[in-house]
Amino acid sequence: MLISKMAAEGGGKEMNEIKTQFTTREGVYKLLTHSEYSRPNRVPFNSQGSNPVKVSFVNVNDQSGNGDRICFNVGRELYFYIYKGVRKAADLSKPIDKRIYKGTQPTCHDFNHLTATAESVSLLVGFSAGQVQLIDPIKKETSKLFNEERLIDKSRVTCVKWVPGSETLFLVAHSSGNLYLYNVEHACGTAAPHYQSLKQGENYAVHTCKSKAARNPLLKWTVGEGALNEFAFSPDGKFLACVSQDGFLRVFNFDAVELHGTMKSYFGGLLCVCWSPDGKYIVAGGEDDLVTVWSFVDCRVIARGHGHKSWVSVVAFDHYTTSVDDADPMEFSGSDEDFQDQIHFCRDRANSAQSQLSKRNSTDSRPVQVTYRFGSVGQDTQLCFWDLTEDILFPHLPLSRTRTHTNVMNATSLPVAVGVAVPAGFGGGMVNNVSANPSTNGNSSGANTPGNSLPASLPRSNSLPHSAATTANSIGSAMDSAIATGVSKFATLALHDRKERHHEKDHKRNHSVGHTSSKSSDKLNMLTKTKMDPAKTLGTLLCPRMEDIPLLEPLICKKIAHERLTVLIFLEDCIVTACQEGFICTWARPGKVGLLSSQNQASSPSGTVV
Image (cartoon, rainbow, N blue to C red):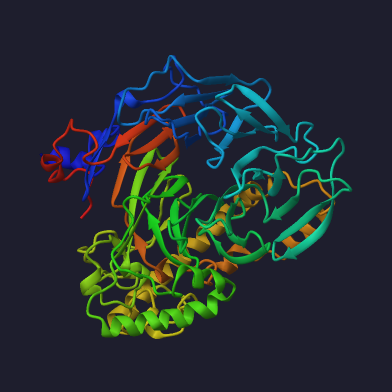
């Protein structure tokens, strides 16, 4: 029993064992081996140098009740199958459509859910050489090819998505750092497009295409520096979150073409991004091995999560486990309509709304019951689940009532003396500032470290105006001040240490990606020269120090593949993951498969961190 528990916790000889099930408070999630999708020969794909395996779903409203369709790319190949999920075994011998490309590889794809029928679907596919193809895998047709001559952009397509609510507009991101808005009904032109400036802001510029006749692209966005790795539309389709190799999350009002807010990674590039179901929070992951939670309303980082041992490749919210038990739980800005109407004044709005929430909770004995569930997968082959609950969202609530649901390591409120700051030796290598074990006793050697100019009470540049909202819940006691000082010393020393050692290496990595070759490149260079030094952003609203905000621990953290993970999708009755070997796995949610007794498994220690 002890050995199995050690293995489940990640220790002992079995720590590299691939998990086929795990347990959370909902019950047991079980891998369905018969529902695995891959290339028909089921041979692991040699993924060296290949683009990540990606998966897209669409429901075609088939009258048979089995309307789910799955598309995935593996190397030069693209497959389109009926997806049977938890109901029936996958039949890989009968793909609806299969395509093999020469000279280029598919990198990403997206279905238009508005136009999908049992007879026809519109699927966009982006390629490593920069082209975008519109195909119908049911009719087995290729209707259009965009950027065919690579006159618009020669770099790899990193993300492609239909604009929400549109049957014709789609958005394409490239590793050049450019975003392009296309219309499927317009041609691309036979010469390189000419642009005129539409809007320019801090580290971004937007141009329209100068042309007498309507042609693609309609708009060109130049965002940040280096590759634009992923973007995601807000649930209402009005806002666009972009993450780039320069380490910045940038959130735009899509229609107004205005920057709403920004956030900087702890270090390295940001690789993935997603929105909460209500659009109030954004989670990003990347080369700092962290997941970072950013409040859309407050425009600030509210928490980070540390569980991965290498780069985080995908983050996604679980819409089906996320729960809000209050009729109007947030009360940030009244109704959703009111929230959207006044979105441009988010910072002013957030301050007054936070005060309203504080007043309500000071009179209401029942705390707001909110739980957001999100997941992440990474190059460390691990799947992590995270719960974001009211003790993080509303830190001024009494912890005694609210701190029972989320695993949190808060560097300035843990009753521990901090010993040493150890830079982890993995992947992105984030810095561990805090002992993860709250029962550890020791002396803080930081108290005697010379040359420390940091004050005992750390400034909170990311705090809201009234004192109840400070995330560390510090009450100014001597113990808290001493711990805060010790932590800040080591965090600062360790970080500066790493900066000196890796400055040149990071500089090369972040600047090696090709830049745009358009006429706006001079303007972009002028913009990026004013880019804030990453070392100067640390400790600001853009990038709070590790000890200034709560550090989440994962609910579960399980190794589920041999190769790096590239897909995480939450569906109603299952979870879908995929690895770079080309295997797409289906995990049945608790109670969705009668093969296991959830009651017997619920008490198992494996899979649940208490």
